[in-house]
Image 1 (cartoon, rainbow, N blue to C red):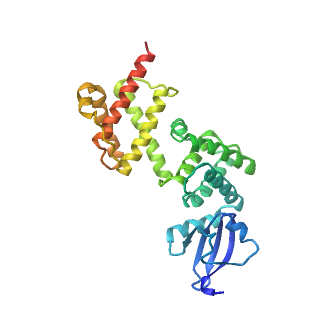
Image 2 (image 1 turned 45 degrees about the horizontal axis):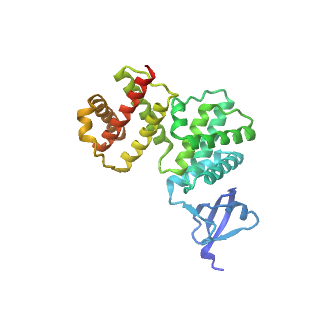
Image 3 (image 1 turned 180 degrees about the vertical axis):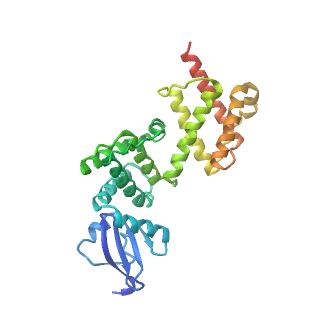
Length: 288
Protein backbone atom coordinates (compact mmCIF):
# COMPACT_ATOMS: atom_id res chain seq x y z
CA UNK A 1 0.00 0.00 0.00
CA UNK A 2 1.39 3.40 -0.98
CA UNK A 3 1.53 5.59 2.14
CA UNK A 4 1.51 8.73 -0.02
CA UNK A 5 -2.05 7.90 -0.97
CA UNK A 6 -3.27 7.27 2.57
CA UNK A 7 -5.48 9.55 4.60
CA UNK A 8 -5.41 9.16 8.38
CA UNK A 9 -8.86 9.56 9.92
CA UNK A 10 -8.70 12.16 12.68
CA UNK A 11 -12.33 12.57 13.62
CA UNK A 12 -15.74 11.38 12.44
CA UNK A 13 -18.06 14.36 12.39
CA UNK A 14 -21.15 12.61 11.08
CA UNK A 15 -22.28 9.88 8.75
CA UNK A 16 -21.26 11.93 5.73
CA UNK A 17 -18.36 14.05 7.02
CA UNK A 18 -14.94 13.21 8.47
CA UNK A 19 -11.76 15.08 9.34
CA UNK A 20 -8.59 13.47 8.00
CA UNK A 21 -4.88 14.14 7.33
CA UNK A 22 -2.73 13.38 4.33
CA UNK A 23 0.10 11.27 5.71
CA UNK A 24 2.56 12.48 3.10
CA UNK A 25 2.06 16.20 3.80
CA UNK A 26 0.31 16.28 7.21
CA UNK A 27 -2.32 18.48 5.55
CA UNK A 28 -5.76 18.47 7.17
CA UNK A 29 -8.77 17.70 5.03
CA UNK A 30 -12.52 17.74 5.49
CA UNK A 31 -13.97 14.86 3.50
CA UNK A 32 -17.57 14.60 2.33
CA UNK A 33 -19.31 11.53 0.96
CA UNK A 34 -22.51 9.62 1.46
CA UNK A 35 -21.98 7.23 4.36
CA UNK A 36 -18.24 7.91 4.58
CA UNK A 37 -18.39 8.62 8.30
CA UNK A 38 -20.36 5.46 9.04
CA UNK A 39 -17.98 3.38 6.94
CA UNK A 40 -14.92 4.85 8.66
CA UNK A 41 -15.92 4.08 12.26
CA UNK A 42 -13.81 0.94 12.60
CA UNK A 43 -10.88 1.79 10.34
CA UNK A 44 -7.99 4.19 10.79
CA UNK A 45 -7.21 5.06 7.20
CA UNK A 46 -8.71 5.75 3.79
CA UNK A 47 -7.07 5.71 0.41
CA UNK A 48 -6.90 9.15 -1.20
CA UNK A 49 -8.76 7.83 -4.25
CA UNK A 50 -11.51 6.10 -2.26
CA UNK A 51 -14.70 6.39 -4.36
CA UNK A 52 -16.71 7.27 -1.26
CA UNK A 53 -14.96 10.65 -1.12
CA UNK A 54 -17.22 12.99 -3.09
CA UNK A 55 -15.67 16.29 -2.02
CA UNK A 56 -12.64 17.41 -0.03
CA UNK A 57 -11.47 20.72 1.41
CA UNK A 58 -7.76 21.19 2.10
CA UNK A 59 -6.07 23.46 4.62
CA UNK A 60 -5.09 25.74 1.74
CA UNK A 61 -8.81 26.42 1.30
CA UNK A 62 -8.30 28.90 4.13
CA UNK A 63 -11.80 30.36 4.36
CA UNK A 64 -13.56 27.01 4.23
CA UNK A 65 -11.20 25.37 6.70
CA UNK A 66 -11.53 28.31 9.08
CA UNK A 67 -15.33 28.02 8.92
CA UNK A 68 -15.23 24.30 9.52
CA UNK A 69 -12.76 24.54 12.39
CA UNK A 70 -15.11 27.00 14.11
CA UNK A 71 -17.93 24.55 13.52
CA UNK A 72 -15.95 21.68 15.03
CA UNK A 73 -14.92 23.72 18.06
CA UNK A 74 -18.18 25.45 18.90
CA UNK A 75 -21.09 23.32 17.70
CA UNK A 76 -22.28 20.22 19.57
CA UNK A 77 -22.10 16.91 17.72
CA UNK A 78 -25.86 16.47 18.07
CA UNK A 79 -26.45 19.68 16.13
CA UNK A 80 -24.19 18.41 13.36
CA UNK A 81 -26.04 15.08 13.39
CA UNK A 82 -29.47 16.70 13.06
CA UNK A 83 -28.13 18.98 10.33
CA UNK A 84 -26.94 15.94 8.39
CA UNK A 85 -30.35 14.31 8.70
CA UNK A 86 -31.98 17.47 7.36
CA UNK A 87 -29.47 17.62 4.49
CA UNK A 88 -30.23 13.98 3.66
CA UNK A 89 -33.92 14.87 3.63
CA UNK A 90 -33.25 17.76 1.24
CA UNK A 91 -31.18 15.51 -1.03
CA UNK A 92 -33.99 12.96 -1.19
CA UNK A 93 -36.58 15.57 -2.23
CA UNK A 94 -34.60 17.50 -4.84
CA UNK A 95 -32.98 15.99 -7.91
CA UNK A 96 -30.11 18.44 -7.62
CA UNK A 97 -26.54 18.35 -6.37
CA UNK A 98 -26.26 19.44 -2.75
CA UNK A 99 -23.93 22.41 -2.33
CA UNK A 100 -21.36 21.54 0.30
CA UNK A 101 -21.55 24.97 1.91
CA UNK A 102 -24.78 23.80 3.56
CA UNK A 103 -22.65 21.49 5.75
CA UNK A 104 -21.06 24.64 7.17
CA UNK A 105 -23.97 27.04 7.19
CA UNK A 106 -26.86 24.89 8.42
CA UNK A 107 -25.32 23.57 11.69
CA UNK A 108 -24.13 27.08 12.56
CA UNK A 109 -27.60 28.50 11.93
CA UNK A 110 -29.41 25.78 13.89
CA UNK A 111 -27.00 26.12 16.82
CA UNK A 112 -27.56 29.87 17.05
CA UNK A 113 -31.34 29.52 16.58
CA UNK A 114 -31.53 27.05 19.48
CA UNK A 115 -29.50 29.42 21.64
CA UNK A 116 -31.82 32.32 20.86
CA UNK A 117 -34.97 30.31 21.48
CA UNK A 118 -33.74 28.91 24.77
CA UNK A 119 -32.85 32.41 25.94
CA UNK A 120 -36.20 33.92 25.03
CA UNK A 121 -34.89 35.96 22.11
CA UNK A 122 -37.35 36.75 19.34
CA UNK A 123 -36.81 35.48 15.81
CA UNK A 124 -38.52 37.78 13.33
CA UNK A 125 -38.78 37.09 9.62
CA UNK A 126 -40.37 40.03 7.78
CA UNK A 127 -40.56 38.05 4.54
CA UNK A 128 -42.30 34.95 5.87
CA UNK A 129 -45.42 35.23 3.72
CA UNK A 130 -43.38 35.72 0.56
CA UNK A 131 -41.06 32.86 1.55
CA UNK A 132 -43.96 30.42 1.61
CA UNK A 133 -44.96 31.49 -1.86
CA UNK A 134 -41.53 31.74 -3.47
CA UNK A 135 -40.07 28.57 -1.92
CA UNK A 136 -43.06 26.29 -1.20
CA UNK A 137 -41.16 23.00 -1.46
CA UNK A 138 -38.29 24.30 0.66
CA UNK A 139 -40.79 25.55 3.24
CA UNK A 140 -42.50 22.15 3.47
CA UNK A 141 -39.13 20.49 4.07
CA UNK A 142 -38.26 23.18 6.62
CA UNK A 143 -41.43 22.31 8.53
CA UNK A 144 -40.22 18.70 8.77
CA UNK A 145 -36.76 19.93 9.77
CA UNK A 146 -38.30 22.07 12.52
CA UNK A 147 -40.01 19.00 13.96
CA UNK A 148 -36.70 17.10 13.93
CA UNK A 149 -35.04 19.97 15.80
CA UNK A 150 -37.91 20.19 18.29
CA UNK A 151 -37.72 16.48 19.09
CA UNK A 152 -33.93 16.51 19.45
CA UNK A 153 -33.55 19.68 21.52
CA UNK A 154 -36.99 20.12 23.12
CA UNK A 155 -37.55 23.63 21.76
CA UNK A 156 -40.54 24.83 19.79
CA UNK A 157 -39.55 26.26 16.41
CA UNK A 158 -41.63 29.33 15.46
CA UNK A 159 -42.87 29.87 11.95
CA UNK A 160 -40.47 32.76 11.39
CA UNK A 161 -37.52 30.44 12.02
CA UNK A 162 -39.00 27.89 9.63
CA UNK A 163 -38.80 30.62 7.02
CA UNK A 164 -35.07 31.06 7.69
CA UNK A 165 -34.55 27.30 7.49
CA UNK A 166 -36.21 27.47 4.06
CA UNK A 167 -33.52 29.92 2.93
CA UNK A 168 -30.75 27.54 4.01
CA UNK A 169 -32.44 24.65 2.22
CA UNK A 170 -32.71 26.66 -1.00
CA UNK A 171 -29.13 27.84 -0.66
CA UNK A 172 -28.09 24.21 -0.33
CA UNK A 173 -29.46 23.33 -3.76
CA UNK A 174 -28.86 26.61 -5.59
CA UNK A 175 -25.77 28.66 -6.34
CA UNK A 176 -26.87 31.50 -4.06
CA UNK A 177 -26.01 32.43 -0.49
CA UNK A 178 -28.54 32.87 2.31
CA UNK A 179 -27.57 36.54 2.44
CA UNK A 180 -28.44 36.94 -1.23
CA UNK A 181 -31.78 35.18 -0.74
CA UNK A 182 -32.66 37.62 2.05
CA UNK A 183 -31.55 40.50 -0.16
CA UNK A 184 -33.78 39.29 -3.00
CA UNK A 185 -36.71 38.77 -0.62
CA UNK A 186 -36.28 42.34 0.57
CA UNK A 187 -36.24 43.54 -3.04
CA UNK A 188 -39.47 41.69 -3.82
CA UNK A 189 -41.06 43.27 -0.75
CA UNK A 190 -39.89 46.72 -1.88
CA UNK A 191 -41.34 46.17 -5.36
CA UNK A 192 -44.73 45.24 -3.91
CA UNK A 193 -44.73 48.31 -1.64
CA UNK A 194 -43.74 50.54 -4.58
CA UNK A 195 -46.63 49.21 -6.68
CA UNK A 196 -49.13 49.72 -3.86
CA UNK A 197 -47.94 53.25 -3.09
CA UNK A 198 -47.62 54.32 -6.71
CA UNK A 199 -51.11 53.05 -7.60
CA UNK A 200 -52.74 53.70 -4.21
CA UNK A 201 -53.95 50.12 -3.99
CA UNK A 202 -53.72 47.20 -1.58
CA UNK A 203 -52.84 43.84 -3.14
CA UNK A 204 -54.61 41.02 -1.22
CA UNK A 205 -51.81 38.76 0.03
CA UNK A 206 -53.99 35.66 -0.21
CA UNK A 207 -54.97 36.30 -3.83
CA UNK A 208 -53.82 34.32 -6.84
CA UNK A 209 -52.76 37.59 -8.48
CA UNK A 210 -50.31 38.27 -5.64
CA UNK A 211 -48.96 34.74 -5.84
CA UNK A 212 -48.39 35.07 -9.59
CA UNK A 213 -46.69 38.44 -9.16
CA UNK A 214 -44.32 37.19 -6.44
CA UNK A 215 -43.48 34.12 -8.50
CA UNK A 216 -42.72 36.32 -11.51
CA UNK A 217 -40.44 38.55 -9.42
CA UNK A 218 -38.49 35.52 -8.19
CA UNK A 219 -37.76 34.11 -11.65
CA UNK A 220 -37.26 37.57 -13.12
CA UNK A 221 -34.48 38.25 -10.60
CA UNK A 222 -32.85 34.90 -11.44
CA UNK A 223 -32.96 35.61 -15.18
CA UNK A 224 -31.52 39.09 -14.74
CA UNK A 225 -28.62 37.84 -12.62
CA UNK A 226 -27.96 34.97 -15.02
CA UNK A 227 -28.21 37.39 -17.96
CA UNK A 228 -30.81 35.26 -19.66
CA UNK A 229 -32.87 37.18 -22.20
CA UNK A 230 -36.16 35.85 -23.58
CA UNK A 231 -37.41 37.74 -26.66
CA UNK A 232 -40.64 39.68 -26.13
CA UNK A 233 -42.29 40.51 -29.48
CA UNK A 234 -45.11 42.47 -27.81
CA UNK A 235 -42.89 45.14 -26.25
CA UNK A 236 -43.42 47.87 -28.93
CA UNK A 237 -47.21 47.75 -28.71
CA UNK A 238 -47.13 47.61 -24.91
CA UNK A 239 -45.61 51.08 -24.83
CA UNK A 240 -48.69 52.44 -26.61
CA UNK A 241 -51.48 50.16 -25.37
CA UNK A 242 -50.45 49.72 -21.73
CA UNK A 243 -49.01 53.12 -20.89
CA UNK A 244 -49.96 53.00 -17.21
CA UNK A 245 -48.31 49.62 -16.67
CA UNK A 246 -45.31 50.51 -18.82
CA UNK A 247 -44.61 53.71 -16.89
CA UNK A 248 -44.72 51.79 -13.59
CA UNK A 249 -42.52 49.01 -14.97
CA UNK A 250 -39.88 51.57 -15.95
CA UNK A 251 -39.93 52.99 -12.40
CA UNK A 252 -39.58 49.50 -10.93
CA UNK A 253 -36.74 48.84 -13.33
CA UNK A 254 -34.70 51.62 -11.72
CA UNK A 255 -35.22 50.07 -8.28
CA UNK A 256 -34.30 46.60 -9.52
CA UNK A 257 -31.15 47.78 -11.28
CA UNK A 258 -30.07 49.76 -8.23
CA UNK A 259 -30.50 46.77 -5.90
CA UNK A 260 -29.00 44.13 -8.20
CA UNK A 261 -26.28 46.38 -9.58
CA UNK A 262 -26.87 45.15 -13.12
CA UNK A 263 -28.94 46.05 -16.17
CA UNK A 264 -32.52 44.86 -16.61
CA UNK A 265 -33.22 44.05 -20.28
CA UNK A 266 -36.07 45.76 -22.13
CA UNK A 267 -37.60 42.31 -22.65
CA UNK A 268 -37.98 41.87 -18.89
CA UNK A 269 -39.64 45.27 -18.66
CA UNK A 270 -42.15 44.01 -21.20
CA UNK A 271 -42.93 40.86 -19.23
CA UNK A 272 -43.32 42.96 -16.09
CA UNK A 273 -45.84 45.12 -17.96
CA UNK A 274 -47.86 42.00 -18.75
CA UNK A 275 -47.93 40.90 -15.11
CA UNK A 276 -48.87 44.38 -13.92
CA UNK A 277 -51.73 44.46 -16.43
CA UNK A 278 -53.03 41.12 -15.12
CA UNK A 279 -52.62 42.32 -11.53
CA UNK A 280 -54.60 45.53 -12.07
CA UNK A 281 -57.25 43.66 -14.03
CA UNK A 282 -57.64 41.15 -11.18
CA UNK A 283 -57.94 43.88 -8.55
CA UNK A 284 -60.45 45.80 -10.65
CA UNK A 285 -62.57 42.69 -11.15
CA UNK A 286 -62.57 41.85 -7.44
CA UNK A 287 -63.85 45.36 -6.62
CA UNK A 288 -66.85 45.17 -8.94
